[in-house]
Length: 66
Image (tube, rainbow, N blue to C red; front, side):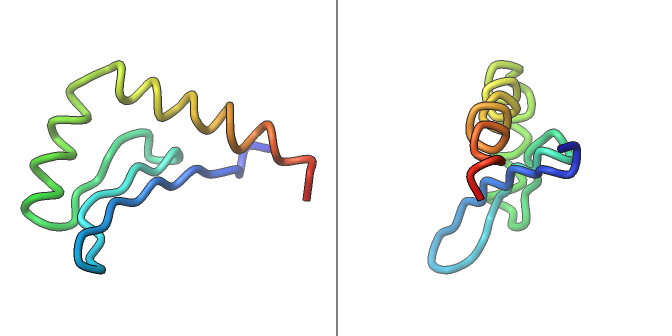
């Protein structure tokens, strides 16, 4: 169960500009806009803890279904 991973990607015009990866534990930006937003989101502990809780609520809850 430790290899379960949540990835939440953000796209604009078919270009991924930011992503939250539960294995990394923070947002990563891929464009100038994405880097700026990732830094802002990473500074807010409530956003990070909310995303980490999504892994527990969504992924771990549904692992036995498939």
